[in-house]
Image (cartoon, rainbow, N blue to C red; front, side, top):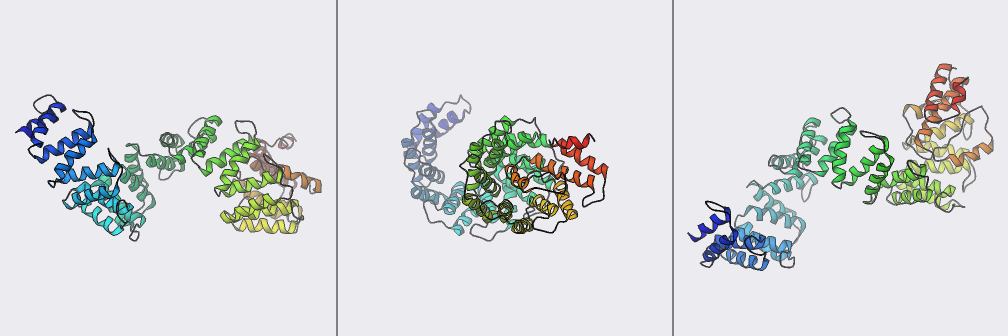
Amino acid sequence: MVYNLGFMCCEGLGTDQDYTEAIHYFTVAADRNYIDAQRQLGFLYGNGHGADQDWTKSREWYTKAANQNDSTANYNLGNIFYEGKGVEVNYKTAFQYYETAANQGQVDAQSRLGFLYEYGHGTDQDWTKSREWYTKAANQNAVFANYSLGHIYYYGSGVEVNYKMAFQYYEIAANQGDVDAQSQLGLLYEKGHGTYQDWNTSREWYTKAANQNDIIANYNLGIIFYEGKGVEVNYKVAFQYYEIAANQGDVGAQSQLGLLYEKGHGTDQDWTKAREWYTKAANQNDIIANYNLGIIFYEGRGVEVNYKLAFQYYEVAANQGYAGAQFQLADMYNRGLGVEKDSDFSKALECYKQTEGVNKSYALRGLGLLYEHGDGVEKDYNKAFEYYKLSENEGNKGAYYNIALLYYYGKGVAKDVATAFKYFERVVEEELHEGCAYVLVELENDTESDSLLDQRKKYSVVSESIIYGEAHFNLGIMNENGQGITQDHQKALNHFKMSYSYGIERSKTYLEI
């Protein structure tokens, strides 16, 4: 009877909720060794309900209940020692209480024991025992246990990877409302892991998780709408999801939001905001953000050109293993931009060699540039051509432009304007205007002085739009003069128009003819 009065006061049943009165009645019952009252007092003192929060008293009352084999009290004592509530963290003691409660059938303790075996907290790591305890808890519909078993089978933790089993457990947990499982189920439908690939269902599960503020789900929905995976490309919707995830602290979303502000995708172009979001991501060591900040300061996009800052960002990205940044860094050493000029080209060569370990094609192309210009090595067009071709064979489409020039002028290879024309066309057809370290040259006539070749070095790294415009300009010249292609004034005019639209001012001369 006394316990019931305490319970009614605690829950506000038939009377106003009054934790102080509840403590009074529970104490009377607890002193008579009533287990439920002892457990309730442990809860009230632990949460500061009806009295000042007092973990010592909470622990004392839970211990009295646990000594009478109360499974929930044992579980709560495990929490106290695992989380260090009023005591020092002690995984071993926590393990003992969790184990006792788990053996008494307490489902949350079984789930927690699976976790402790998984991570080796308070005991040796043991994937088999972890899986056994998670399974016992899952059989009692424990949400976390179902999710954890999904994780074990998806990543092959102590078992062989089994996407079907992973899918089954994730699906159960997702239907139980677990946000992490919902997000993961979205991934499985996206990848077709353990089930058929289904972009619509993937999007549905990501949306359910996103509605519960799941960061990963918001980010992945951004990707879906940005890249048009199972839906039409929608930059505005992509922007909304990226923005939510970015504000939640997701580094990938922050970097991507920088890109959207840079490109004006789904929002107005804003270089200041692009830089701000790239900086947030870079401060979390995002490699792409560091590289893009390097480009911003190198080319003066929304800021004054600052080679020192550009060098610093490129260096960070290069040290993180980004081949494009390593290539860019080599060029800055080569030309003394933002750093002392590398007179013997040793540092530039070192950067090129670093790219080989990550992206061999960048290193090969960089070596081609050195041999073409005689930077730190004896000028050798044959070797330059050889390295450019090797770079192309390794998948570097940026080498198309360099190869086109050598064919056009017959440097290091037999002169072949028809082949040069084809390579210039590849630059335009594949829209290769996002590369770096292109060497520019204008094809005014069929001659080129050595001095002009030497001057090319100062243009070795330029903005992506200029690269694209230069390729159109060169194709305009060749169509106009019938070089490597049947003369076609209309095609020449179209190329000159495109070239001019990308900022190549000398194209205007041909438009006025």
